[in-house]
Image (cartoon, rainbow, N blue to C red; front, side, top):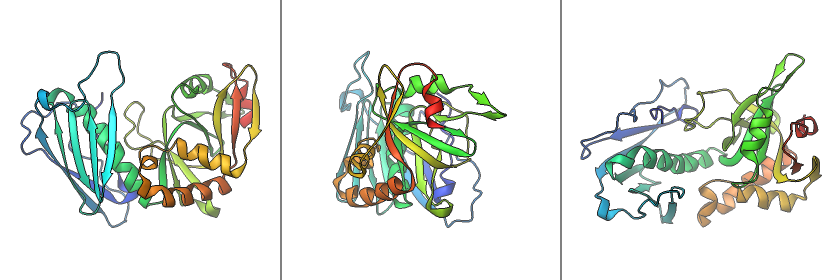
Length: 279
């Protein structure tokens, strides 16, 4: 995994790492972010590290299984548990600590930062969406759905498509950042700053369409009723959608998104023909 170099600059947040108490920092972790470029007032969040012994592991890793992640909230405190790590973060004081088994600090830190980032993002009118997204002719298209819905398949089929001098830009095949703030009430779509599998990309595109992916034997777009669209979007928002205290704010934000961007179902089979329906 590449070093965890990232920027939360567009949110005006700076995360400071304090490795005191953790002598062996893995070489793939970089305790720095790219230089700030915005003029927004920067808030500071501090994460401290300490060692977790293997016998204190809340979720021992089982070979062949996905990394378990559990997030709970008690008042202002977020409690994060994963294989080889336990972390807490105070949403009010911006102070946190992550305790980790040394050989699993890298993965634990990345997952914990995603959780914290999702709360920062919601405060600014945005979410992390479990989705594949691509940019085409200056606009972004979102194909969302749970694991197994076909996001990676659709991304693979879309990669390399070009026509009339236009080229598809793949934003992510798994997680997208969607945030309010565009002209005319648009929502802007971009690659999240904690996306480590793809090159960094600071550009944002206005959302033009959003579809729940449904595997089928033919390509078909099916419109959705507003209430259905809202529930489907909510089910694919990462982390904050599991927190009852964020639901009212989250629903209000998703209602605005559904009014600004058409939401429906995209039924597709594994060939590039679905692309023509979207654009």
